[in-house]
Figure 1 (cartoon, rainbow, N blue to C red):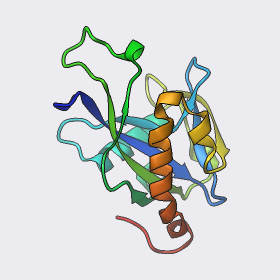
Figure 2 (cartoon, helix red, strand yellow):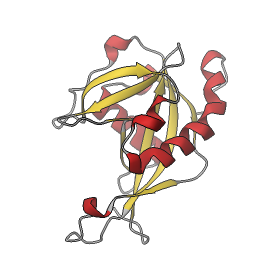
Figure 3 (tube, rainbow, N blue to C red):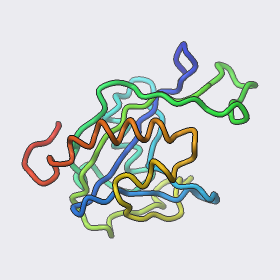
Length: 165
């Protein structure tokens, strides 16, 4: 599903543990790391997409996390020209994303990267909050910075009873 401007609706997932570290996934067969993310299907809300992608990519259930916050608006990034598939219609020039900050309630052992027939990640690590901005592929750095900046204000909710439904 590509919108009229050429962007694919997508959700980004930032998982924080009780130590304030973020889940950082190593892409399968690539020397690249990123947050879990995935497309929003037709007739699916962004929050429904988050929980579907969370299960598919990380093996976690909604009960394993708590929604702490989400970006107010769609954040966009453009694909580099060499990654645009000009032969497909409609042409996708990038992604527009709603980002969610999720607090990890379960133990690390619940993380399972092999629950889907086509895994996204082959490894993972907990990293400091700002590490992903400098370590994600360059064309995503700005959107990562925007998402982390906006969602940083919600971190305190993980250690209190306040949360987003």
